Amino acid sequence: MSMASMPASGLAVIQASDISEKNLSLSADVVVVGSGAGGAVTAYELARRGKKVIVLEAGPYVPSQQFTERFADSLETLYQDHGGQTNASGDLLVLQGACVGGSTVVNGCVCFRTPDFILKDWQQRFGLTDLTSDTLAPYFERVEKNLSIHDNAEYEIARHGQLIRAGANKLGWSVKPLRRNIRQCGLTGHCLSGCKSERKQSMLVTYLPWAAAHGARIYADTRVERVTTEQGRASGVQATVVAHDGTPVASMTVKASQVVVAAGAVQTPLLLQKSQIANRSGQVGKNFACHPSLYVPARYPEPVHAWRGALLGVYIDEFLSPEKGAFVIEDGGSGPVEMTMAAEPGTGKPFMDYMANAKYLAGLVTLIHDHNVGTIHWDGEQKKIDYQLADADFPSMQRALKAAARLHLASGAEEVYVPSSDRRVIRSEADIDPMVDSLENLPQHLRMVSYHPQGSCRMGSDPDTSVVNDKGESHDVPGLYVADASLLPTSIVVNPQVTVYALATRIAEHMAKA
Ligand SMILES: Cc1cc2nc3c(=O)[nH]c(=O)nc-3n(C[C@H](O)[C@H](O)[C@H](O)COP(=O)(O)OP(=O)(O)OC[C@H]3O[C@@H](n4cnc5c(N)ncnc54)[C@H](O)[C@@H]3O)c2cc1C
Image (cartoon, rainbow, N blue to C red):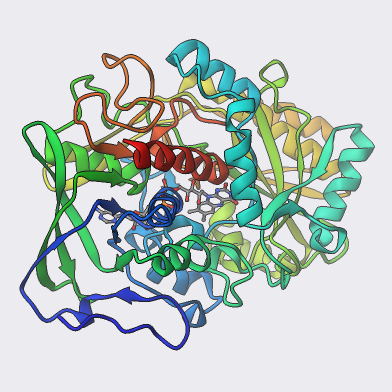
């Protein structure tokens, strides 16, 4: 094997093209599966404490210079299943990054601490009494500092955000600038295609290079197939290195007494199921939630140019608390491709009319506190995401949709497009209730996107009802840790990356002492 030499710029990553041997046998103190939010943070926090760390990432290494700022291309190169991952009934697109840096490379940069009411619920229902706003504060502070997380300055609030803020003020709804992990935002709006100028503080340009500087070795194109155990303890992983044309290049075995699975909330349970471990509770792959979100576009009388300026500017926290509905609305910039994915523009003339208005469109993103009703499992050799919006969550979806429509109208919109399979256009306050109340919770009726898969290996204090403890360690297999979004026992309403970073920081701290 020719080890990748330190490149002139970018990250030292060993890729399939660097490997000439058929069988690789490696060893480390810790092997980390996945290089996204959870994996990268764990890798750095352990490497800086002197641990020998190997990170294995199934996706490719795409240096920032190669990002195209064309969303359709980015879906192809940076996303899981080339952007085509859906639930079993095909009405929910489940977006995840699948590249070195994981979803953090393609995410929208929005940062929230875990809401206090969520942590209180976890304390009461899952025995996670050590996870309070106070005890987690040092971890939040650490990642906020490391990732330059700050309130959007005025120049980071694009035209669409300004319109929405004015509408919220008119309605008397609480509206705030979003917080983002970005330095000197270039206002290109291409966050979901990766940040070419490396201003987004994704794992690709922060924790991964920092981990590498502390000696961590990062392998791209390397899919972990199985976690291995010896005498009941985690002992390493087996993986396959796959070339970009899909040809297997090498088998890899890594021996390590600590294994961190951070492959994201879809792949982590699949890997544990394939390995047939850590499932005494029967909960691996269960309790999947995903913040099924709607992108609600509306047409304004003046040009908005929703693709100009920072992607996300402000949010409405009026309804965040459970008593008020537990949902949030964020103003979302959008390029032409996202606009076609969002609402039902029809085909032929209706499509042309809709897109001819593109510069007049602005969008809102709704996030709800969905119940953990999904299951991730293997169907033969195929993964299956069984997730239907629960009837119990449908009213929440309707409330969020109504609020988004009301907000658009208050902000001056002339037409609000309901993202449903039959074309519904709201033109006045009087249209809102009848149009939204007559929606039904049927498969294929709403166009939903999940940016936030969560909860498929939930943590808790009870080994009978949870997969790992509050330190991410498996109740069944010592030395096996989960450190990604699959830990979250419930959905958290707000965007989850900071929760994952903070939990991973805490898990690494405990691992270093174990
Ligand atoms: C388009 C988009 C926008 C988003 N916007 C925001 C936002 O604005 N704010 C926010 O807070 N959150 C946002 N998120 C969500 C956030 O990025 C995720 O919650 C977070 O990154 C989850 O971290 P993770 O470690 O669980 O998984 P990921 O970051 O997804 O990392 C998992 C990694 O594991 C790799 N992997 C999978 N299987 C294997 C295997 N078998 N072997 C080796 N590697 C494997 C994957 O390829 C992937 O790179 C967004 C997500 C997307 C997709």
